[in-house]
Image 1 (spheres, rainbow, N blue to C red):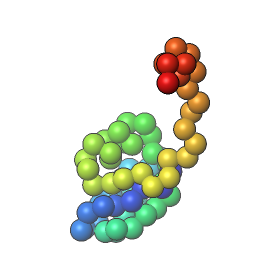
Image 2 (tube, one colour):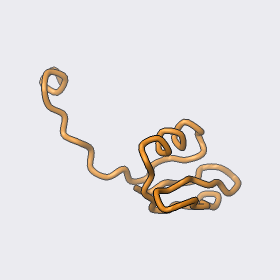
Image 3 (cartoon, helix red, strand yellow):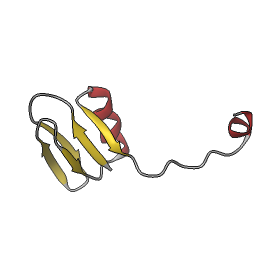
Image 4 (cartoon, rainbow, N blue to C red):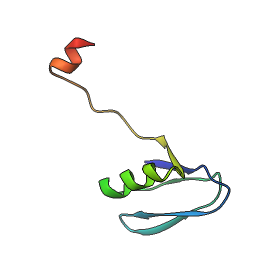
Length: 65
C-alpha cells in the first residue's frame, strides 16, 4: 500500500521489514501488519493513497445496497 505523511514533519511507520521514515508530504509504498496499519491510521498523521482493490462484498449486506 502507499502511505502519505500529511504532517509538517517526518514520521515513522513500522513496516513488515523494519522502520520506514516518511518525510512531510511524502508518499512511500510499504507493507504494514494489520495492527500497524490500524495504529498509523488512528494517529491522524498518514493517509492511504492506494489501498489496492477492495474485497468484494457478498451476502445480505451487499444485497441490501
